[in-house]
Amino acid sequence: MITSKHLSADELREKFLNFFESRGHKILPSSSLLPENDPSVLFTTAGMQQFKRFYLFPEEAPSVRIATCQKCVRTGDIDEVGDQTHLTFFEMLGNFSFGYPREKGSYFKKEAIEWAWEFLTKELEIDKSRIYATYFKDDAKEVPEDKESLAILQQVEGLDDIRPQGFGDNFWSLGTEGSPGGPTVEFYVDGVEVWNLVFNEFVLKNGTYEPSELKGIDTGMGLERLTAMMQGKSDVFQTDLFDAIISKIEEISGKKYDENQKEFRIIADHIRSAAAMIADGVLPSNKDQGYVLRRLIRRAIVQGRRIGLYDNFTDQLTDNDLVRTETSKEELKFRTTLEKGMRQFDIISGMTVRKNDEHWSKYEIDANQLFDLYQTYGMPIEVTAEIALEKDIPIKEGAIGLFEVMKKNHQQKSRTASSGMFKGGLADNKVETTRLHTAAHLLLAALRDLLSEDIEQKGSNITEERLRFDFNYPSKLTDEQIKEIEDLVNQKISEALPIKMQEMSLDEAKTSGATGSFHDRYGDKVKIFTIGKEGEQPFSREICGGPHVENISQLGQFKIIKEESSSAGVRRIKAILQ
Ligand code: SER
Image (tube, rainbow, N blue to C red; front, side, top):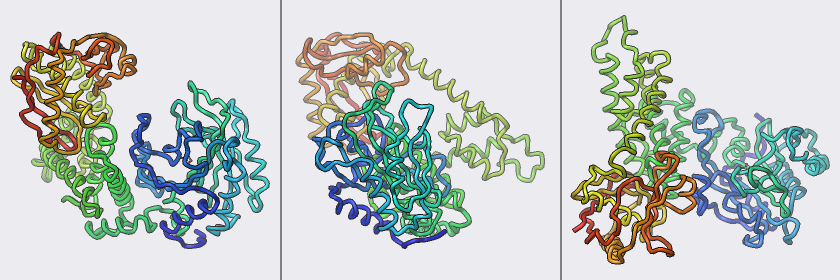
């Protein structure tokens, strides 16, 4: 590959930001990987996300010209990771403008295109003949051809190759209601897309793109890809961004990157992504961001085995203490599962008796066995498949498909079971149990009120003696916090608040602001229990199928008897009513 100027990733980042700073842009820091006040996405996936509002309300922007280097996570491509370019975590360089033409200093297509060209060809000194550009033209869509961009591109000196592309390639939108979107111009170098310039001139409303009065610019250039290009590499894992982690994997495994590219790439990408997530406050769990993180760490561990890393290693791939602690904890947990599962695997597959038996096809693993490994031993199917490959044990044809069906059926069955006789995680239907169940609602409301609105129920188990309640929270509660929680619950009990039950659709329930973590477990109609005074903001409003007392004054004195860790990022409270 032809190289131009050799630049490190740090130099590129700096060059980009300086270039736009000297063109009147305010340089802002990357926002967190966890989007603030935006439940529409799990992670930040693009530079424009933190500025989404400014396209509609430019007067709120700290400047009408902004440039950033934004940390992003995209999970849609996890299965592609292992090739030369796909990454879960990456950095995106971007310049933005809002409120065109109304706001003074705002700009649109002409400046965006000309500056991109100038940056690539003058600043980075990429030979013009290596570059081509695409613009939007799609006869099948109501959105008109972007003739304006075509005309500007035709004026660019030295750009000889301009290609039309359709909606799938040259139209960009976050895809969420109310978000801006529009046609794009993309710059390719040596056939690889490096820079995407989005011209936000539409807003997605009720599923259609409506022209917006104010227009904006949103560009994105993946730093890792750009770095590879500038360093003459077609493989992002061979750039200086990955040097340290790849060498470390070579060192601890004694294997070479060149001979084990796929495994090295997955481990490097996944652990680097996990580190970025943990640094931004995600902890491994079974839900949402935490679940993505857990899968990344576990997948890295599985790949590690393929290059001979059978002992804990993730902590050696980062020097951030928090990250080390968290990945190690998860690794330890997963290895215990793996070991048990693998012992069982050996028994099931006949490995323990097989030895030199030549008729080993009789030991093929079938769907029932896959299901047992999954259900009883917690082995994810992809891990079992990996191990089977490693040990040269065949999986029966069609068994994986059958396994998936069994898994679905089982999920359905457990859903039905959980909506059975004793609802709401109750062990029985006794009065004591019912009282504790109502108390659990108060407890959740108090936790959300006092600690964090993000708290959700992660599990509960209620007997006539005590309630056990699990919820997401990153740290141990202090004695003061426990006291405050008890006090708030007891205060509400003393206010003798009434409880009201209503039935509504799940959607209505969500809009009404009800909490309830087990979204997909509920049927069409759900019951909502509201605790609070008529006409006032309720203290608690929860989706729940269980029985409740009629008035909370019947509860007595609420007392927390234990607070402990339940699993990574999940705390457990045990409480009684006196
Ligand atoms: N939002 C566009 C992208 O993600 C350009 O920044 O590609």
